[in-house]
Amino acid sequence: MPSTEILHHVAEKLHKCANEESCEDFCLEDCPEWLTKDYIETRLRSYYSDAKLKLLKMYAKPALGKGENYGGILTRVKVEFKTGKSASKRGVTL
Image (cartoon, rainbow, N blue to C red):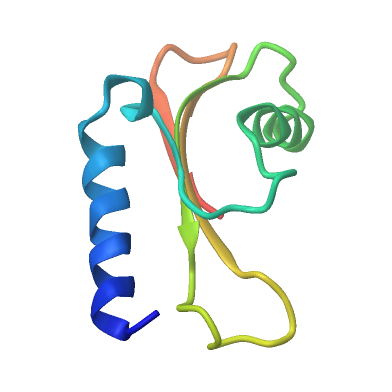
């Protein structure tokens, strides 16, 4: 696939993800199958020792372009969540 087609494809996916209601809070683009809302929520609950932690938003996308890393898949994940101990929202980039 020529580079212009790849760029168009990526831009189209980002536009679609940003504009769909179902993708508004949970946008996962080209992520490993195991990287899901439930997986991240479970890990955050464990890390913060808070069974009531609720994942509100999650955005995940490749951290590097295709072919830039041969040792594994690097994914950038941004999340917003609330803990059971606080009414305020917190955010973190993983």
